[in-house]
Image (cartoon, rainbow, N blue to C red; front, side):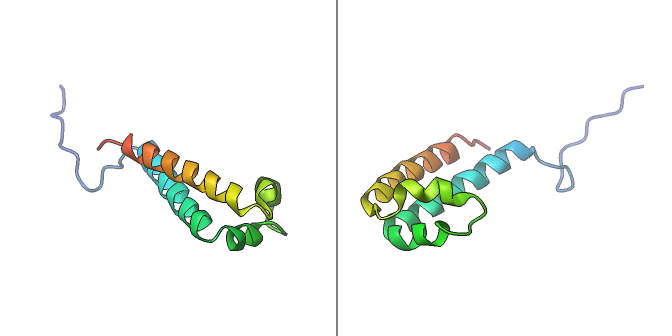
Length: 87
């Protein structure tokens, strides 16, 4: 005997992937905004004793213009990722 389908409720877990993608988009936009507005301070925070992030920020040390350009790309990519999440 088939059981009738139940409507989803608050206790039914939602798909995880869209939420992870949304969190990544929020991180990208936020990190991009901070990098755009305060590029030197933001890079300085991550250039020493940052559990491996030093390698990632090395191209931006003493290059605030480069960090700002990357920030614009980061913000655009984050917004594009968020726009793809349809609910």
